[in-house]
Image 1 (tube, rainbow, N blue to C red):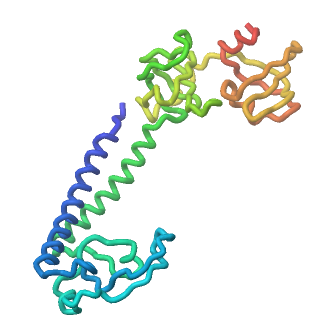
Image 2 (image 1 turned 135 degrees about the vertical axis):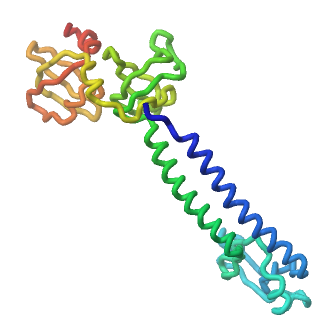
Image 3 (image 1 turned 120 degrees about the horizontal axis):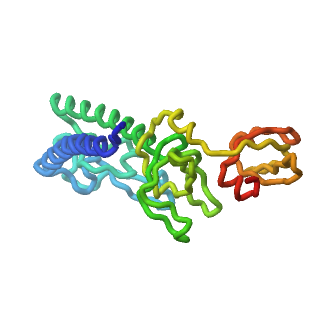
Length: 269
């Protein structure tokens, strides 16, 4: 059975980001040391300008006004020697004076390799998470006990294929899980975990348990169809139990498979 690689990918991604972060920290520390050793101007942080007024009504600082740094020791020569102090502000973005880390040729190569690796792992992780998410057609196992009445709870350990995932009227994501015997269960999506993301549908088709029904479509809503049987009885059938009814045309006679348990509930058996 296919293994879930999510944990391994997350670990590799953390390591790659750590390498990338260590290189950036090394470059930042070097810039800080250079700035301090050169007696860089703390007033303007080596920019040569200061903010003289800002309305503070704008998060971007687009209304700010600026002036030359008033420190006498802050000169073009001293700023060239010290460089910019690491750490940018919104005003640096507006003034085009953002500090950027500088690297050696070897460090730049390591940064690029780490960056490429991070992008690749990000893509692979997103695909793996999607692959192992609870969706229709995947085999799942119930791993957490549910709430509510005990006689209605789905037992932990139940395995089956997901026929449908939906949100109930309370906004809870639930799924219809059909086990190997054809019985249907309604756990929440948080109660289950995917154990096979790519099962063979044929392995589960033979377990479909149902009763063939023929009737006329009388009325349709967003969630169910009103069917009139040849016996004269009318039944509301939810699409979750007979998906083919969703495409049936009002007034037409159609056939569909109704789950045995529902057929018993509706009095057809």
